[in-house]
Amino acid sequence: MLEVLYEDNHLIAVNKKSGDIVQGDKTGDTPLSDFIKAYIKKKYNKTGEVFLGTIHRLDRPTSGVVLFARTSKALSRMNEQFRKKEVQKTYWAVVENCPPDEIGILESYLQKNQKQNKSYTTKGKGGKHAVLRYKLLSKMKNYYHLEIKPKTGRHHQIRVQLSDIGCVIKGDLKYGAKRSNKDGSIHLLAQKLEFIHPIKKEKTIIQATPPKDAIWDSCR
Image (cartoon, rainbow, N blue to C red; front, side, top):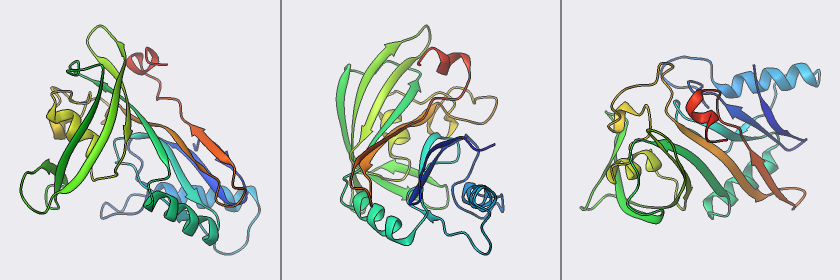
């Protein structure tokens, strides 16, 4: 069942569950966009095709805020805000080790391996510049709760940059976690999006609550 976080005539945002894919891919699984189109069609009794524009994406095992456009004008304007890095994204992560500093900036160059669907830090040519800020929010018995504000949007950026400093995200086997989560998720949440509404021109903040589990519950 969809958890709608924000909805008006121009935009709709949902709290994506781990395992959902934002857009269709080679798996053939039904994407989140199709579920949202069906929701809109039913709620507003629409005939014919429902327009829904994908503005950004989240990795399949990640949960949290995903924003879609309900009109082409909203889509083009939001795409422009993302392109100009005017959208502030905030993530929460639960990691296995304490970061070296309570507040820090991570900066590196990342290169994607298409075949492995994985990114690596590189010092050679071809890497894309990646920057994020992190802050330690709390210490738990076995884990650490971080807030992350990426300045760039590279493939698997948060996952690989945290892994590089020994702060592997809980459940993220691809980047070095000791064990997987039972549901295949990783403890990475797109917690908040802040942007200027493309039509109303008002500051808009959309927030998601983490999935229900004992570790996320201690982060609320």
